[in-house]
Structure formats: structure tokens, C-alpha cells
Length: 111
Length: 114
Image (cartoon, rainbow over all chains, first blue to last red; front, side, top):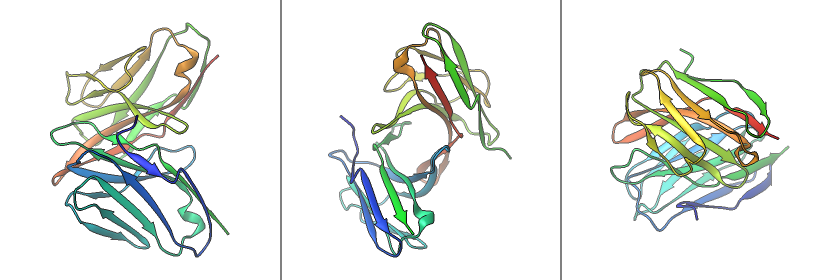
């Protein structure tokens, strides 16, 4: 059983549409991160959120950390084909060197 | 500044063979990690090294050993490879930014055990 559950597992949308990916847990995290991974490459950090209720924007991507610091969401507005990839959330429990990763959401944006 | 580098990029082993996966980082990070990635399971931590001279087991350490050779290098060894170890292996290093930790990943090693 994974500490972080991501949904949906797969998402296929048309270019220009919006999408939301969810990351949920019963544990409280001191910080939560989102990574994007493209085929044949390692994950690349997109954002880190540390405060409950925090919202961060990165161009067309909006990240939200839940008030209780147990969940997070990633929203992409007007998706582009370049947004295609595997999106991973990862959380750090307090005083822990380790990150726990979700299983990932594979996003495909069709032209 | 190459970041995190891993060798080899691809490897095929027969059951029972041994090999060492190499990882190096040039960012002067203290902490380094080895993960494996399997379809539908995300990244699972095998071993980590919080600082030079220390190593600790992660979530799935069985069948693996590690060596933190110096601050830059962290290697992962499979003593007797098994088909269940077929996976993509990622090395990462970490820096602390504010109150959070940010990990930087290498490009991965794709290992097949037949």
C-alpha cells in the first residue's frame, strides 16, 4: 500500500482542454512536491509546497496543498502537447530524509 | 555542471550475475538516493545516504548493497541478479531549499535480468 494515492492513473485529453490530477494520503506531510517525467528520462521537479492551503502557479500549472497537508492537486489550464508526461507527487514526513512517491498519473495531450 | 550522472544507461544480465550501477553528482549535495521504478508503482526507495560515510535501507533493500565512496559518488550493487530486479534504476541527490528538500535525478539505468 502506497502512502500517496494518485488519481487518475491515466488521463488523455485534447489540446486546449483543462485537467486536474489528485494526490491523497491519510498522513500529514511537512512538504509535498510534484515532478514531471518524460520517457527515457529522470523526474524533474516542478514545485514544492510547504504550507497548508498554499497555492502556487507555474505558467498554466496550478498546484494546491490541502489545508490539513494530507493532499494536493495539480491543475493544468489549456493543456498543450508539451504537457504530456508522467506526473508524480512526492511527500516528506516530518524529520524524515526520505520522500514517498505516488504511483504517478500518465497524461497524454492529443493535438 | 552535469548534475547527476549514471552509468550504464542500459544493461542486460543473466540470472545470478552481478553488477554495479554507478552514480555521481557534482552539486556538492550531502544526501544521495537509489530508487527503482516499475510500472504502476512509482518510485520506491532502495537505499539512501544522508551524508558521506552513512547509508540506510529504504523501502525495498533486499538483494542490493550500496557504497558511498565519497561525497560525489554512490554506487548500487546487485550481487546475484534475479528477474524480479528488472526495472529502471534512478539515482538522486538532494539539497535543502528553505524548509523543503529538492531532489535531482539522474537519467536512469534500464536493467533487464533474463
